[in-house]
Length: 197
Image (cartoon, rainbow, N blue to C red; front, side, top):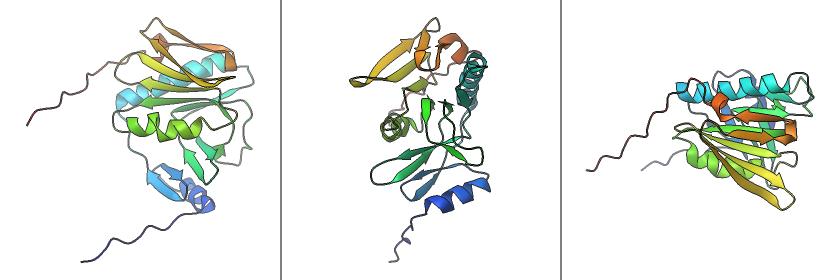
């Protein structure tokens, strides 16, 4: 019986160099590279709406919104990770010749069914260690609901915003995000029910 070859870790430098010439985005977790799953049209519509809303509200202000092509570097005590959030707001950007950002203030993730466990778990937990991060938004894809993890003096607290009339205050970047704009032209598709065998 043969065994599968052991994966060899990839250096940060090799990962960053490889991403510049690759058609598929990869997230980097402590030496290992993972291809990102493709997103649905609903996911892309919501992410585009968020980016458009942020762009309009931040025009002329010091903070800048970035789309899902902008990597975020997370420096953990034992290793480095790179993630591609669906949208990011940065007030102190890295130099233009770098391919990642270190100091996000707001991170937005749209929750697809396939990667929900990762986005709500390890990715959220890693991102909440970023010293500059003030708000981490998890945007539901199948209903109008956004969960915000907001930094306070006591640590991060969870807030929920539901229904299209809700408004998410983002005082950290001097704006508000209406759920009506986040979900503009989105058709909600209910999750398929599990079939009993």
